[in-house]
Length: 478
Image (cartoon, rainbow, N blue to C red; front, side, top):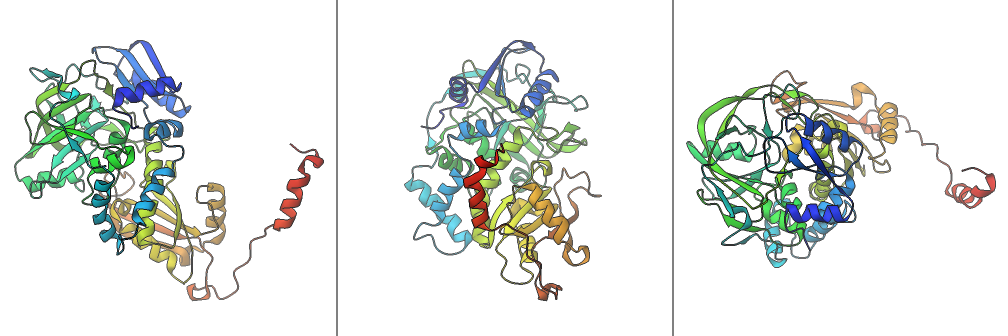
């Protein structure tokens, strides 16, 4: 059974010894973030701060802050498990054709699997209506000393396309300006920003704080266009997500969320937001972003406020990113069947570097893979793509470094292109635009400018390795 909601997940973690309750009073200004930062870097448990200065609500943090916690959140034994289920759906008979044909078929498969969101008339998230609505009661955190203020860091932001009516859910930080307004950190390429552009005026918005962990993760996932995040969450949790109409905006929200903020964003209205100690580990500079106006606020009785802390890796988002890496490998392989595996190193904060292994059969194939990856959704932001042969374990960074440092001739094997980069990429000269590099560390063919035979790697024979395995205890070695 799926975790019913955030509180059910916390109870489950406590029963498994994966939750630590902090009972002394803590300050939401810097103190909670400092605790969470130290705990996640030690592979520690999820945290529940029961007494938070200035608020009656407890704060839950580090909900996904280790591989063990991610497995508990999605109720899986292995990070490959969701990808295996997705691959089984993709490979079902009757779903032939190209990538888009397969993706369009997924809602039908989901309907058969009863994964589609289910609408309900009443919900725990609307047990209490805060009148007048005010953000003052929420224990919103300030993460780092030079942050521009307090930020809601784990919001599920719901909008609808003004033209198609299609729902989108994203996670965009929200700086609290006062009791009724926040920033809405929509980068120009995000769906929420596109909905605002299409509206040409006022766009209704609903923000859910706290949900079951599959719903929270789904809001972070870079899904292909047209795939509903709540459908995806239902697939992950193997049960439909219950949704309820918001009270004052024409948007459905997760029925078992902890807190719901309803309001609007007005096209053309912007306010200076930031700086913010971001997931890159650096402060993103202050800039102008849309303003969210709070018009209605509801919550469940005994609500828990959720938060995540981002900063120098590894942080909690690193483990969520690894779920995305494994889950989206089958979708990449649909377009690029020669791809064997991928690795987004944590230090690359998931848009600065990807290592990919391929089954190479023709000259120029590594370059073809680089350009294809740069053309896939948010992969366009990847600053560095390293391509290695299929016998290289992309998760063994020592093995990757050996191939990169040994196999690359800089003039021949380096690809430099210009194009869009992540808005948080501080190294590029211009916001959102810069250069990207590909490194071909595969074995070279004559057609690729290597006329002599490529050397064979020195490897021990299987027979000798099996022999020493059998005799290892005789050697007296540990």
